[in-house]
Image (cartoon, rainbow, N blue to C red):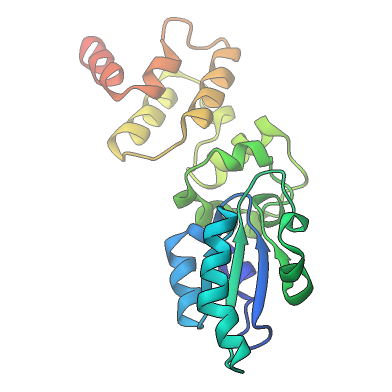
Length: 220
């Protein structure tokens, strides 16, 4: 797979089923590039949120077309957390093909809570790293270390002195690396635990570029 979207798009072949029901608890089908790709294939997305509004749209725009013998590629999307497709009306369940997509399926060996908190813009890079390095099942901290290492090129274990730490900080702040705060906190905890930088406010230096530049000006 070139990217995570292909995993989803492979399930959408035009004119296979007039109605497809999708459980999408992580709102993956709101991602702009994916939505455009689905539209290009002729699929129309209709969210099941307000049952009354949904029923009106469904009956007036799609059910009437089917009654006339016309074909559509309609995707009904259910985005409620902890709610399966069984919550949809019975007539839809009887007529529709059923699919489910989630971050847990796209990143099976990485920690779901960590991936779920990340900006969707980072998913491509994480998916590429996952394909390249095929990690074993990882917990929260190991997932953060994996992303720091293979997406941002930062290996906490290799930062062994002040020169190495300064080089890492310069990369983060001068290159404007969009590292999630949760990963920076993990990096700070790892560096602090090494006990090598007791006179450096490592967490603040990582999280706040203003603090870093003030620190840099003071020291050098």
